[in-house]
Amino acid sequence: MLTSEQRLTLQQAKRLPLVLLLLVTAGFIATAVTGARWEVVPLWLVCLRAICEAAMVGALADWFAVTALFRPIPLPLVGRHTAIIPRNKDRIGENLAVFVRDKFLDAPSLMALIERNNPAQALSDWLTTPANSQLLGKQVARMALAGLEMVQDKQVEKFLSQSLKAVLSQLNLSGTAASLLTGLTQGGRHQAVLDDVLARLSSVLRTEQTHVLIAHTIVSWLKREHPLKEKMLPTDWLSEKGASVFAAAMDSMLQDIATNPEHRMREAFDASVHRLIERLKHDPEYEQRVEQLRHYLLHDEKLASYLRELWLGLRAKLEKDLADEHSALARKTTAMGRWLGHSLAHDEALRTSMNERLKRWAGSLAPDVSQFIGLHIADTVKRWDSQQLSELIEAHIGKDLQYIRINGTLVGGAIGLLLFVISHAGAIVRSLGTMAK
Image (cartoon, rainbow, N blue to C red):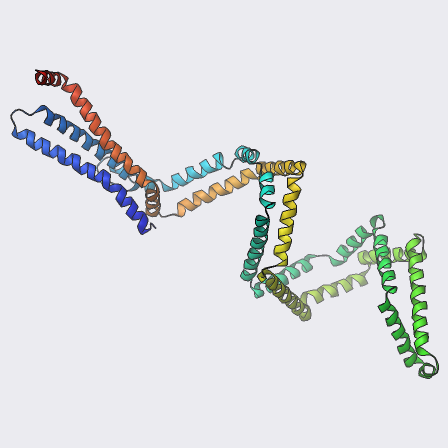
């Protein structure tokens, strides 16, 4: 719908051509009536009438042309060719869609646009400005918070539950676990995992907290199993020394396993992993256990409750962080944007690669994207109301179209003067000669 300001502007634009039409019409009527009363009509009056007549015809013709674009004119023969925009709304939408699709969103146009504007350099210039990278971080955090507020807890819970059930009901858990372990064992990757575990255990054994825990465990064992000996022996000294000896022995054993690729513990670990893989593939007992696990994951209420609590806790943390002016997400996004900007600024090869990738994406995605946008434009125009579309177009270009009516009036008057001069050239010459004498 048009605003009152748009309607007022359009009405004001229509006043001048209407006033000119009324003036030339009044001039034509006045000269025609006056000339009919005189036996000899003065030459100047004939000229004025010709000008007014031609200007009136030009003004009426252009009024008809402009008005016929937007609304029907009830005239015989030509009336069906009026209201051009409302009658052809769907065809206009289809032609506009084809024009946008073929001239703006085609692959050559998009690739040429990328070549002209160097988007990688533009992105680098934008991101290296501190204010812009900070703005990026704030906007990402704001959009994330808005998206989180739109999400309903029950919907998320339902989605997680349905997704988990759908995946678990179709997934071959035993086969998947066997495939996962098989991939892990290829190339001795499971031994690398074992090395990492051994290193971490060795590091834990060397800490003071571990020694204290072992000492307390020894004292508790003596009190429980040998209460009499515990009272007679120096428990504190024994527990401290025992903890040191135990930790040193365990650390020595772990180091031996870590440094010896042929250690029997490694062979035992390797054999255990392969035996587990075979049982997961072929052992009915393991298959039954996996099915029990599947049933537990699908139907256990405690697990469902845990997932709900997990989501609520995660949501609360996200909301608290995103609402903070110094959000961690905003800071990380800002830092990432700044890093990307500096990387692009100092690496021409990276910029070139990014532009080339954008060109390839544009070339491959342009047909589908342009087709989608073209259909969207055509469908959107079809859904519009014909009258509202006509009023909207008239509000935007109607002011300029009124100049056509003004020009029609002026050009018509000029043509009327020219025709008068041509048709009355002899009389004009005689009149000028008489005036000269």
